[in-house]
Length: 466
Image (cartoon, rainbow, N blue to C red; front, top):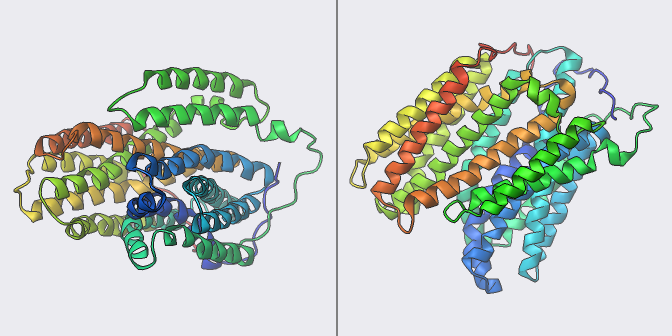
């Protein structure tokens, strides 16, 4: 297993030469998640495929990402975080080339799967590299650094749709795949220049590689996550067999990980660390609320209130803007507990406002709703990430960060089913109010998971240099 990196000599351990490739790499997964949406119609026309088939390009990335995020964190433990980061960027480059030149639809599915795998390496390895450097320099929790990652994720989640529209309109849908090629090259070069090499592997470790990376654990985890995601994706027509499969595989995963020498997921640590599990649940709820806002309210505004797509984008813009401002303010002060409390209250207030809105309501009511969603998202983004950082042992930060993203994918997938169930065949005021009640419950869940958890710190200890 890889030894800890030697102490960096730089007076500013988190300068931009170190951080910029990690931020770029970590942003590529969320931006690819939404980038494809504007190209699905064109892809279907070119390859004579229907909407149900082209939608697989969205789900395959979610599925591969949910499985591979913690897996890449495990690989970082074994092979070194920088090596795995570079490997992920290389896979992304190959995926971009395959998608750009794809002669048949199957090549696009392969490309999207590889994009999911490649981009999944970035966030867990970035967190591992940051933790190594922070521990070596004894900086404490690098709050501003974590805030930068929270802000980058929020920006790229929202910017994917308009960027995809611009690229598709100007160059066609193949540009949605090609854009990964220059981005991968930039991340590759910046990493080689700005991120120090991993330390040599610790001598004397003769454990077989099969056992070191826990291949059975990875396969059982993949089967469990895939079954759950597929079930959540079609809740309007639930396949209960998938739940049975998930329970069987999940049970087998827990039993195996308890006896594995180097488990993918340390279930004993998770069983002891109740706070970390509550952090994952909060992340799931916040992601569910955020994606419900992006998908549900946008569909309702177009279908029931008859706003154009560009008008919907402008109405939702305050959500992104205020999220970024709040995330910067909170991270610069290292605040944790109160932001999580305020986040729960904001989601509750958003749901209440939504219950008062109908298709004839003023645009100002919709902007207020957008702002409240942004407040909930902005206050929770950094705070949840900071809690994860302090609750996780240094050796487990890569896998734990990957699981953090996996729970967000569960929220994103669940939100699409929630919206489908609420609206049925058409976006109506009644369906919108069903979503509003769901948002109220989301806010209540976030609030309770925070105020009942006495282990959440009031604030972090921030580093003196950035």
